[in-house]
Image 1: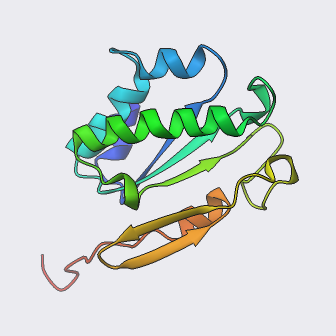
Image 2: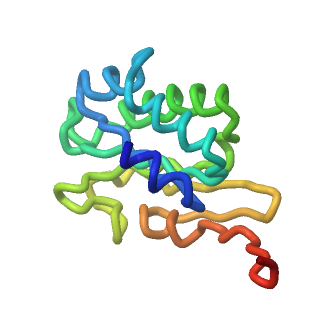
Length: 146
């Protein structure tokens, strides 16, 4: 219920996906919250999406590039089905617990060369979640109208 209230007014959705073994699988399963929240965001008109792949410190091995790529592939496939363009979505591997790739690029994920998005308004790229948030384009708001 709270998710719907906030999302109905949002310019962007940040979908946080847990990378831990079993956690991602539960969220992306047929009735999982990852699917539900992505679908609700799109249905409620949120056109811009960022995906944070969290708990990268809990993967096997920790900070696994293979696990990140596996999750990115699966989430891309699903969000494409509901209407998002995966090329316009930044996927950022993060660890909220340690702060990896949140505000500064992490030395724990040297393999991550950064995210890059393409949309009709132009391209953007970066390495961190805050940079992905800064790349969000505010929609045109007709402030001169009632």
